[in-house]
Length: 184
Image (cartoon, rainbow, N blue to C red; front, side, top):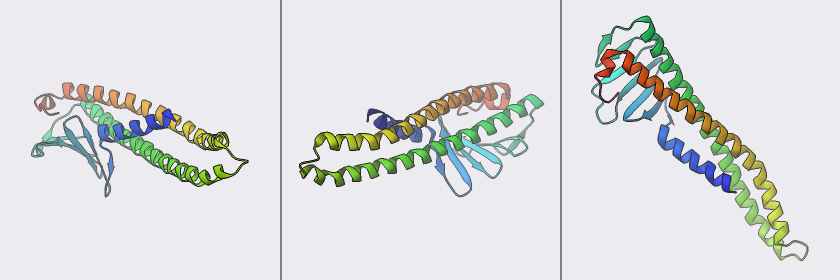
């Protein structure tokens, strides 16, 4: 039962940390002090408190900062491509974990309802609290293995998010214009 509680805690923390949300054809998330939104093939990035200076990585991996195109060399463009690809992958994996967690949460709620429904059986002489506990534990065991699987996926996602942060720093350091954006 303890791992089920841990799972819900992880889901809540991931939802807050990554800010994943599904929208009308766009993916929106928060990363540090930035808002990131995938619209079509472009990735839009802005400061969470001031969206007037927006950064866009286009579908051809060009960089536009504050409406001005920034010239990128081949290596910098490859970093832009990695950045967009990693962002998309993080969002998709985060959503998948969220959906799995939601399904498990619904199964957990169903177990709660079944547990309540079994309470009257304890009034019978051939069914006692040990029988009740065995019934509940068998239902919970199935969910716990699913929770452990999601926890493993969440840990992998966390490591991937750390690599994305490293890529973010590398991208910023390699593109001089980005170094001057204190919010990026």
